[in-house]
Structure formats: structure tokens, C-alpha cells
Length: 404
Image (cartoon, rainbow, N blue to C red):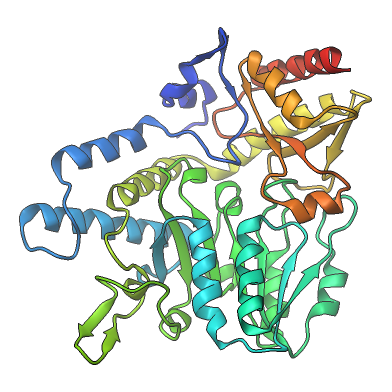
């Protein structure tokens, strides 16, 4: 499909909304992306014609639902170069990381070490704090440089025989920094540790091949990938998944249950206790199929052009500090305005129909590293335009004029 942003925008019904009498300019895709008609329609059609519970019936609707659910797993596997049995469906990235901290982390003991970075989202911080509190393991932090880039030299000094897990973002949800995950994975494997990549932003802005980057686990959410909320993905190497104990107990994740014992199912089913997000899996499948109709490089070029335009314009404003200035960023633009709270900026932008994010972005350690309590963040998606960047910049100017 030829990349035509106007044709793409026509597929997103929410973009026709008016906010405070202004056309919606949605610059918050890093928090959650909007959904195209094909995703909304696939979920609606499934709910109206084929919905039933999966894996637990032999009637027609159950068979259709099971096929739809497992087809979504197969499509997800192909999307990231994995095997079907290596894809576990979760509620989202947060649950996937908690699952890993619980199940992979059961083998950790006092003195073992876990490495994360200053760039991480709280979802990739809090579960490891909790694991350390349970096990006596130590959490170690890889530094970033002042431009927001990953400090590889410092990371190398942290690796040692006590390192058991390295859990790192693919792309920072605040700064847009792309991390050298292939090198991180190779160095981690040299010392015999396991590597986890939080791909919440990475899978949106890069073509991911888990075999090429050779990571042990890769996690992401559907809702940032133009799919529905309520479903996420945990990729794990088969041999590792089948060695890990389950996270939750219940139906589907078992082979045999007696009064005296339980035998667990193999992966991925041992990690999918209870009724799974069936309609959401259908929506994720539709989102993946929709994305696959585009040249991903063309999407990246479009989004990067928007980032460069917005960045160059903000740099002309003396009171604006751009956060994260390293090269090769994903289309995420965090900034602070001297003497102005980000919530005030966001509130005024909303009056002009512009939706951005304001706060600590679930990354308080990063905010501390930057010397801030919070920041504003604009993030660009497949449906944004240069004209919208112009509206954003004009609204920023009006906000600064009003607030200073």
C-alpha cells in the first residue's frame, strides 16, 4: 500500500472529532494509539457472529473462537519472527513483566543482581524492586548520558558473575532513545544471564525479529500498536518458558488436577490461566494485518519527519528545554517550559484541540536524573501530519504567552 497520510487518517473515525470547537490533534500515541476501522470492525464482527469461550467446547462457536484466538497467536509470532508456542498472551506489558519477575525470578537468591536502566517505565522497575525484596537480590542501575543516550561503558562495568537478569527498554517511552539491544543481549549472554526487552515502544517503531536480536524475552502491548487494550504479548524462548513455573493458577494452564497434585500444561498455555482476552486477540490480529499492508520504513520516515519538524520549531523557543537530544530517536518529544508546569501547558493545548501527555510518564527515576518532577510529551503516530505539528507549535506559543 502506498503511504498516503490522508487516506490513513480516514480510517480512524476518532480523528474527525472536534475538541473545544477545534479539530482533534492527537499527539499522545506513545501512551495509547488510536484504532483504525479494520480493528474496530474485526472485534465487532467477531462479537456479533462467532463469540464463545475458547479451548473448552466442541460446538461450532467455540471452535470458531478457538481458531480466531490461535490464529492471532500465529500472526503475532510471525510479526516478530517467533514460533507460535513462544507467544504468551497477557493483559499487557505490565503483566508480562510481572510474570517474568515472578516466574523467572523464583530462582534468584540473596546476592544475585538484576540490571535495569535509568530510562525504564515503572512497569520495568517496580516488579524488580518487589522481587529483590522477596529474594534478597540487588537491583543495579545502568546510567544514561546527558543527551539521553544509553551509557554502554557504564553498563559493561555492572555485568559480573552475580548478574542473573538484565531487563531493558527497546525505546524509551519518555525520550524516544533507541537502545542498542543486540549488543546488550550479546554482552548479557556472555556472562550467562537472561535478557528481557520491554518492547512497548520498540515494536511500534521498528521491525522486530527476536531471533536476529537474540533476546530471551520480549514484551509489548497491543494498544500502542493500533490494537485494543486488555491484551499484551510475552515472547519467550520455548526452552525457557517450559522451565518456568506458572504465574497464575486456574483453568486451561493445567494438564491434570487431582486432590493431591497438579500437573501443568506446556507453554504458552501454562501462563494463560482462566478465560483469555479473546476479542482483544482478534483485534490485535487485525492491527497486525493492517500494519503489514504498509511499508514500515515509509511509516518511520513519515514519523521521523514530524519529529524533526517539531523539534526544530521548539528549539527556536528560548524557554523550552528539549529532553533527550541523542540522534536516531523514535518519534517521541519530551520537553519542559521554564517556570511553567507541564499540566498547565497540556490544559491550554487541550483548548486548541491538541492532546499531549504531561506528568512523570511513569518514569520517576528518569525525571530525577533529568532534574525535573515532570515534563510534557508529544508523540507522533502513523496518522499525524505536518499541519498538525504547526497547530501544536502555535498552541505552545499561545500557552507560553499566557502562562509567562
